[in-house]
Image (cartoon, rainbow, N blue to C red):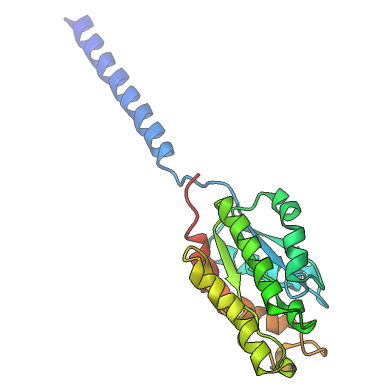
Length: 223
């Protein structure tokens, strides 16, 4: 009888151990699907390439810091090239994607405006970039840009419409209307050239665009 009781107690302990093991496995399986770091790439020009600033003071580094401060494991990949146009970004897109980002911010167009490039050409380049990213199923944010006022009202309207039209034609694209919102034209937030944000200007850019970037990250599907 005592052996029977012992065997029964042992059997119950064994059963509980098995149930506990199953529960642990189930709990691990229920962990967030994306346990690894998210790679967010910014395809841009000198604004994103930290022109005139230390690397750690530029937009990619400060955006990454802001996202991490909110508990997001994100590495922001700087794919900015100073002086780059939409044509340049289009030409190097495949090379940039070798970093295998999970999501992309397209922040090009400023140099097209500075060089008075025909807006239709800029639009074709941006459309090609967005379509290539969509084909790869990469969640994308398009950051808009405005043309210098000295190019005239007609040019300015057509230039700005590139971004709003492309975004409206692609409902899956997250749209941030103006990359330099709150900073452009403010001497206290720009370097002496009046074009590139200074340290305080970058912080203001990050503060303003952070909610939109978080919306972009929210579109990431579990792998």
